[in-house]
Image 1 (spheres, rainbow, N blue to C red):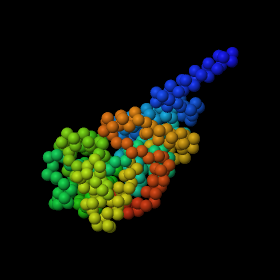
Image 2: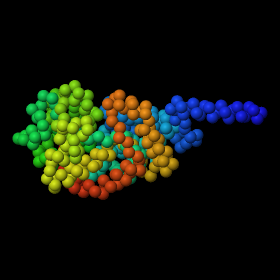
Image 3: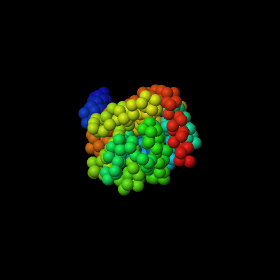
Image 4: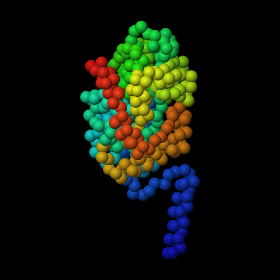
Length: 340
């Protein structure tokens, strides 16, 4: 009997070692998420970059949390507010979380949007997957070749938008700082739709992330004329940054604030007062997932960037942003009123 027990022990140790050597995470038995299904609300269209990121990362979160499945649930509408409101009302047991542009939520609240039925500072932030500067793009055949051409326009810049998302607010702040009027065209369905409008010439330009614009840029269908940052990005070193173009200190103040908000970008978050054990387990799982070599390789293959930040850091970032963005409120509220 003792020999059999000894053999069983050795077999278990060997199995664990082989699992580690194979690079497969060994989950702690009885962890908070063990065997459970997690619903990951993505309040964006299924074909967009946000959903592509979520579907890419979800299996790795399941792997490291021990969950049976992390199921992506697209709930688009109202510039991401519909699905976010659903998350706000979700049971705080950690089995329903969300992934979207955290920047959009913050801006909607600062603008006092009636659709924002939440307090962004009270969400439970679980980790950021990526931050990347937003870029202003025009169609390849557009007469607008540079940001200087934009400043010289004798008419409003025509901007097609899918709704009151972070790019809607960022464009409003940018063009206020540039002193150029903006003509906003609403009613488009997601980034792919606004992108097509710009390529066809139905609009002058739009703003999006570098990863969502790279395909059209590489195909020669669109051209980047500005990055929303304080200095040129590594991906586009020849393209001027917004804070290089806007040098007036008063005009640059709200622009600088919006750029800070945009650093939150693609993030995971849960309902207010989320179960502490669930919060700790999910923050750990997301951090480990985003460091997984297989995920990093997959993201690189897809030309998706990753720049992770842990949940505690993002919680502090949002708290800081919500108390330091007073200069933005009048511009964001005015932008919202302009489309009503």
